[in-house]
Image (cartoon, rainbow, N blue to C red):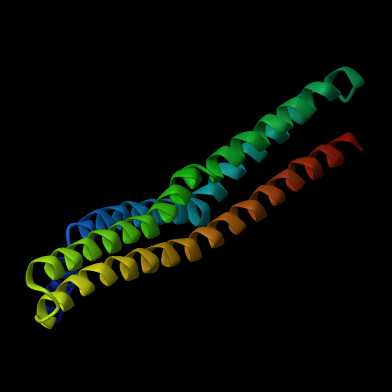
Length: 186
């Protein structure tokens, strides 16, 4: 418990040293990781059950219908609709995740600019004779940049993995639908 409190204190000092922009970066980071956790849970745990439900419905539909040319176009349309539903379910929140990942370095840049403005204000008022005042402004300029880049990189690594996994699952689902369709037509 003591280690956790000291870790929280270090994070608090880091955020204060980076200035107001660090609160925005922290908020974006929390939202980013909540969405990543939700997508990871869905893709790795929930989607399999949903996929099995859709495959069962597809098999039941195929068994109830006679195999003729008239129903073929309907089956293709329904198969494409199921693949579309699967794609929407798998890629839900991906545009928002991508936007949040892109916002992190921009917020870091905003922190850099505001920190440099503070440095220039210190130089204008006190001159270059007080290095302690200059150092606080420079750290306020560099810490948000670091934080924004670290947040973006961590999110990007997991996002690319989730995106790749969703493409694999969608391809497998499409192949399973086609395999069931071909098996029932024989």
